[in-house]
Length: 193
Image (cartoon, rainbow, N blue to C red; front, side, top):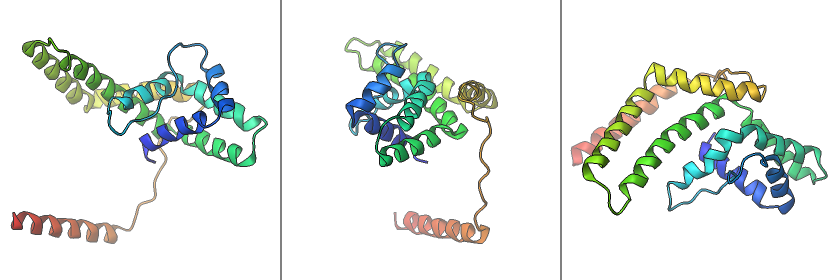
């Protein structure tokens, strides 16, 4: 699953039809100024803008998809709706959503401070140091457990079992060959330098 591709796919799905967009807006009516937004190729901060509505209103977005799937729409729209809803009903997706939101939110705050025309270098260094400490703490077991607590809360509100899907193990011999090829390629590249 490509996380940001799915985020963009949701935006495109709803924005491609005024009827679908109005269904989404009616489900998001409780919160002002939070609606799905597109990703931008040139503005990385658009990613935090795009995932914030999902972080806080995933249930409402899912409800809008459900309403469309039950509504008077063509079969291809209903099939796409079912596909999108299934992708949202995934505990791994919820964990990735929380992870990216927490990281991008902190990075975005520091980025905005650094971009101010009258920023203080000492204050900027302090914010960067705090961001670095946050990222180190977030990589710890405590940070991961905090992420899981938030994800389980969202999952329970959507009646999603808070478990990771087991993946099939691929052929280990094939993996070893791929690793060997990568190693040899890297070794040759560094020798040429």
